[in-house]
Image 1 (cartoon, each protein chain N blue to C red):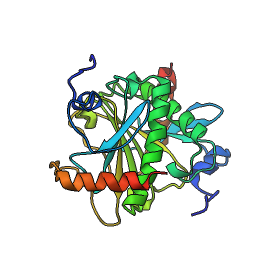
Image 2 (cartoon, chains in turn brown, orange):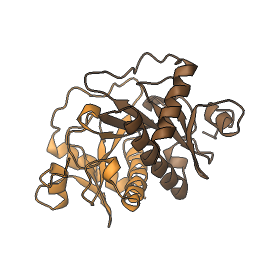
Image 3 (tube, rainbow over the protein chains, first blue to last red):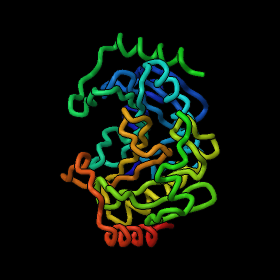
Length: 139
Length: 139
């Protein structure tokens, strides 16, 4: 499948729609997931147009996982999360819903199940506050 | 928590216990998960002693994700999997059960749920055959 330049992450990268950004550098961007599976759920994407893991050039992949590690450390600290799940989904059958490759950083808390099925839009003010917490926790 | 050198992946790396290997290079090793969540479930680990994502040096992280991409491509091909989930769990609360950092490559098939809760040991002959299929599909 050819990369669809109208996908929501491409639009965020182009500045056409807003996002609660927590980190950006030359090759990557990180922002809060608007339908968080748990408090602090953050996404990391490469700037390069790539639909999935298989389309991602080696240098962009290395930059994306480096940013994921850095942001995940901040998310863990900001939310005092005992567990952190990294997930990266390729293809609709794997649950991919936005066709620009992205890494999920999902805090996990003892005894609290993920909101896998309740995919509701979160409150924007809460997301803005969460983004500020992650930014403050970045090394 | 200090790295526990008796964990099962450390023992596989030292050659003390067997594994159905599909790929190895200087920095990484890939092998079949013995309790697969779906047919073709493969793990990729760095050789360096690191409990989780946060303990992994940048160069080892880059090597591990590069091997993960390469092996995931082979798994997708070998199992004709329409979807591929990459997952990497940090901390018991996130579901980590072996405390050597590892990336899961989990094939996803339309309409087939993951065996998240039935963590049963798979048949060794089947795992050996699956490993051979992945090795044959490696570029």
